[in-house]
Image (cartoon, rainbow, N blue to C red; front, side, top):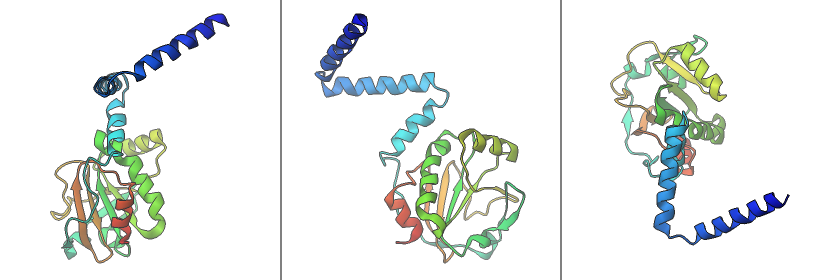
Length: 202
């Protein structure tokens, strides 16, 4: 018991000394800790990116374009995890969140919790279509591992030029008038109030 008390006193003393250090010194400690997380943890990179997403430094989720989809694009064919077939037009009765991702893509994995948050906040006000070219069995294992319930779809043909993603993740928000109102590459904080307003049109 005495050893425990002495140990706690020592920790408290060290903590008080640490708090007196300068801001620059503490900043570098945080950087070192982030590097250690990246090295030690298998998903360390994802965890660090997830923390950075919350700062909002990775880009805006505001409307940034307005482009009407063509009939050919609306006829783009997709299949869900159960093999049910759809065309993009099947989702045109509500705003659509269209995200291109992959299981191996760290920024994609980093932004997934914020996409789940956006889904929860918007409820039935919008459709979510998360498109991947990964094999279905790999996707099922990935979703089960993370206990994520996501609406994943697989292209049955090459994505139309209007939607094509040159990098991952790529996200498009399409309004109920079948117009692209947002396009972005790279991870974003999709759980933000700004993103909710973008998708719901409020």
